[in-house]
Image 1: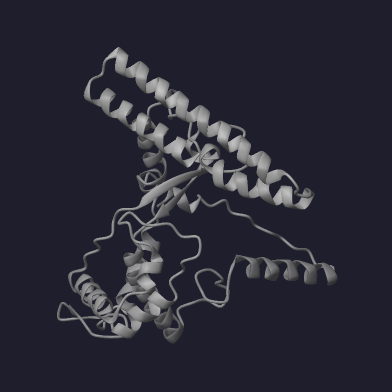
Image 2 (image 1 turned 30 degrees about the vertical axis):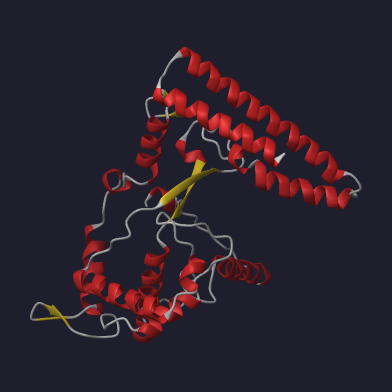
Length: 305
């Protein structure tokens, strides 16, 4: 099959090149014919391979095989984005139109213009910021947050970089590559990160975004029925980890974090908070007390990116 697929693939590639060079009806028909032949041969060989693979398997092994098969071959079909509706109800079918409406929905920051902003809350945040980052004669004082990034910090960020199930980023870099860097490359990252800190410049502003369908939606014509998954630069993620660790250490030292905060802290998560909520309700029920639960709907975070 490899020899057959290679031959058909070459024929398909040649037909595509001819049609791109000259958009004639003859070349178009040849392209459609080559594409149909390749697709038919692929389906035939895939079906034969499935029959051979399933022969002699028990029920449990068959279930595992089909689960792996769907994950491998049908993921792209399940995440295919068909026609979308804009705010006026018009159907969008071209890739460019769908990209624009998805960008406006998730990344344009429309919440900044649609929602009112609390000026008092803004002033409180500015006051806290001034206490966190002191200024002296117009220049920042050196401290734990602003000191130079060391080689040990970069190595620590690389060691704890997650590589399981990761894809390459927009620069073609896989996190496993960063884990295996030599000392000279590590020192280059140290110099680059310190330069970014000195100039307040963030060069990693491009991400690859994949949209996946949210399960259980009655219709997938609305952009909100999809969830964006962004793959940003892994080199930028290293610098983010270093900054995040410094901020978390400063917050613990200064006592900024509330005792009730469960998010964005080690050994704490939403599940832990839900267990606390249930235990509080059960205790109130045991004491035969009345409980009031106030639920506030919050705009999904992926629409405010």
